[in-house]
Length: 122
Image 1 (cartoon, rainbow, N blue to C red):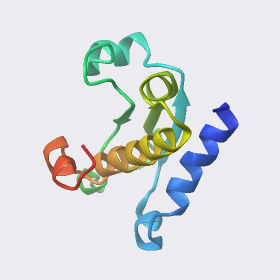
Image 2 (cartoon, rainbow, N blue to C red):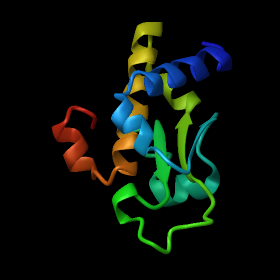
Image 3 (spheres, rainbow, N blue to C red):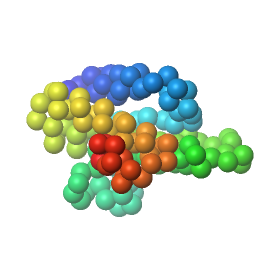
């Protein structure tokens, strides 16, 4: 899958969200990286199993208080190499990208990994 196709699948996943959720996504940059940076790998276990397909870094929506202003955007990063490595077919890759976008947005909305697992987005 080309980078442009990958980006389109990410955008399609965002466009498929209900309007009420899309309106609440604020000050978040969604990026695609080939793999985690050394810092991300060190802090978030990017080299260990399970593989790191995506990462949310920032202040979750529900924790933003009145002092949350003039901040750099939170970041959701999808790691293309890990997804491409572990998905054998294009449909698998599309499903993994969509699930990763939803998983990381779940963190943005304040859900932890256990809650996301319960929603089928583990």
